[in-house]
Image (cartoon, rainbow, N blue to C red):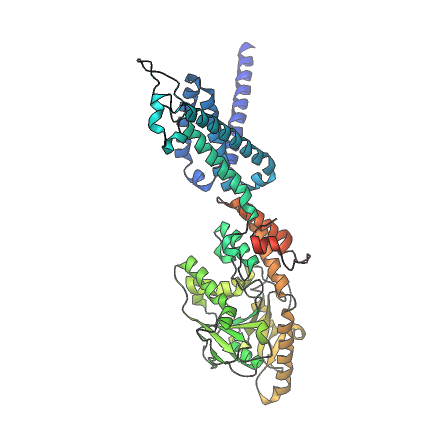
Length: 511
């Protein structure tokens, strides 16, 4: 019986030990997930350093009788944790308990400032009476020393210790922490006076995620409507643009073989029809998206795309409220070429609306092209529409079109002739039909202008909500608070934006 009882106790002890080990491993994993990336990547080295520091600290704690120095060590650990952990990688916790943490920072800062001032006043008072202090008279080092506490064999005071230096360090540390709480109330300097402050502030926040693909150009928030025409090669993209304008734009090339080999930005409503002149900054500003996307392409791929062209056109029907983009036909090899794919992908991503031009002669939609829409959850009718070009009443192939459309969407929607944009074959037989088709397409394009700015705000707000929990960096609290103001105020389409915010627009103060 005694042996059975011993085995039972041993088994129970083993179970408790296993539970304790599992609990420790769980807690360790949780702590690692909260740690900054550089801690996770060098955990073993940092663990050894922490253990050695802990042992030495314990030895110092036991052997030392100076409680002020112990408190300084404790204060240094608390302040360093606030900088390296809370402000750098766990800003949501910091925001939730900000009054508590801020009170701690202010309390510690006040204590160390008072201690430094008391020590400094004592040193100043004794500068003329203690010989070892005289060399520090007029020297900046007098701010770092404290009164000597021991004497030599001759009965004279020893050299003063630099015990006030730690107080200076801790005052700076907690002043820095307090400053990081004040900084969110000020607009970034480069955004003050910017042509589009909301876009600038949005980019400032989104940059925290090292996610250049989600950034926007300065003309995005209030710029003209962006309409792109994309699809496979030789489906008639340039021809449709020319038909909408009533003439071919200056650099248009129309041929049975692939003709448009550049990404072309068409700034409409210009006083001339030619490539945009170098000093025509008003038109260039409308096409600044091309430069912005090229900057992203360079960050992602290491180089820019040279096949871009800005063109001005006199067309007044769409006025200067629209910018058209004539994109080269997608070819399968683009899917594996970083520069071309990134530029094409960003063009699709940053358009207000995309018209995919399709015809039965070049009707295959390649999988890599379809992925540009499917992986980004682009929805037909909201983000893009398909134009059935060169449509022939006698040779309709909606089954083939639906087969291709299925690659771009997870929806079970079936396209029908009645609810698909069509542009009839350019022949004498369909002249009246073509005019009706183009009139319908014009009205569709013009209708995009009614909701485009709301849709832009919704897209920016969605990005901020998706990445909000991933903010890191020393200015993470500032970026989080500016991001929250954008989410709840500036990008909230249900609130009327103030016409003029004097605090923010003049003084750069955000409340």
